[in-house]
Image (cartoon, rainbow, N blue to C red):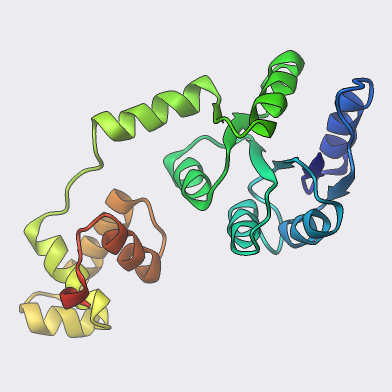
Length: 206
């Protein structure tokens, strides 16, 4: 297995946790996503314990890059964050599992073994959050928000969107913030990409 975390003390703790178990071998440690990708390519681990928030290339970007490279390694996210904005991108990028750092040793050991078999592993709070997403979809966008989203997809600035819809630029900005919040994104490109993925926009809208 490979351990990817930007905190040396966390890496040391995880290495120590698995070092005494003959069923595991820690092949290497990475301090950021780019190093994790490079080591995965060189060492061919079965499982990568991946932190999400690291300097440079973060965990989600690393998971995407590993998938692009065709790496067979199973990625088990181990982080302190369980918000939609953290969980969903990691799962969508291809993570096999998602655990929080308050997970006990025995549970973590079982999770790594499970991930190595290619089976999904989710901490209870993350599983509950994902079920909630399925049962209660995110707030739907209003007709006006969809109008603005289509204009954004077409490359319009806030000022241009305001002029075309005969509303103030401040109103457009407010709608854009609501769109970000409902889609769980931070910028215009991510909003458009997420909207296409969810079927809120079609090619004709872009």
